[in-house]
Length: 383
Image (cartoon, rainbow, N blue to C red; front, side, top):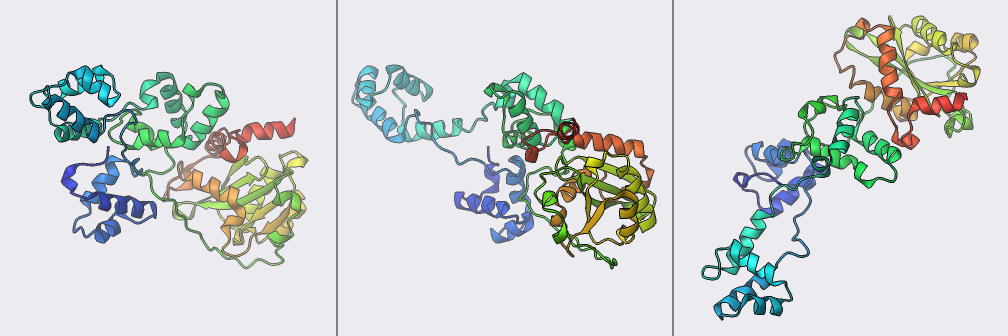
């Protein structure tokens, strides 16, 4: 259901409002474009719908049309029976009888008024799938509480119940149940488990960072083996430093083939500390999982030659300002913001705590893995 009449937006303005929202414009810009001094009216419409564009309203295929109601009105005025009117319309007598009864009876029936009331009655929110299926609702709530995204929940359900359509639901339907105020199906407490703290869905966008470092004898990512590029062979890793408040950091590693993640506590970001921590963790892995490491151009990997000698893991460096070349690692760092929001002092977390967070990530189903988990994919590799 879309907002309240007090916003006084025309149908055309509402269409423009949602189009601008889908294009990523902020509430203030949309309000100015629509000639509104105050942005509260725009925000109210967006908030009621959770930032999700409402489906355009359509009459039901079997609902009475205005011209049919006018024919009923003329039939009543001419003194024809309900059965005769129904026969002329090709409708059931009970349909005509119910229409008259809902609108005051034969003596006061008016086609236009009856049609308007029917359209208004159709605004009642209809029960969604989660409201009607307690078992499905419990499953969805359980996985959301584990910090799974709605898309991961949806994909997992399809794999878990491939032959049971009643136990499947799209990620958009889950978002609607969380964000749209009129539904109230899933508890609002579950929203805190989403990766972002937004109360509405917003258009996708992104920023990139540019950290440049002067590193001697770097080997370009363009020289990385083809088996690493196409993710066909396990053992090729992507890495980066994940930053927090007070110049604190966590080293993050993601295996390209399985998307398996490791989080490493590092006391500082100097090259000796970072390469020692990376080497210690990588040397614990089976040899088949130690082939290469792709890093950005941060100075923490300035001593990459010593690292390669100690671990036999060749280091490749991304191009400047190209974080997308470490896409799996960048995505993982984004997921970590759910657990470590910006401004968090990362030094207070132990390695044991970081291992627990990594386990959470590795037990999440991934769309890119066909909704398998990184842990399951790694286990299959090691068998």
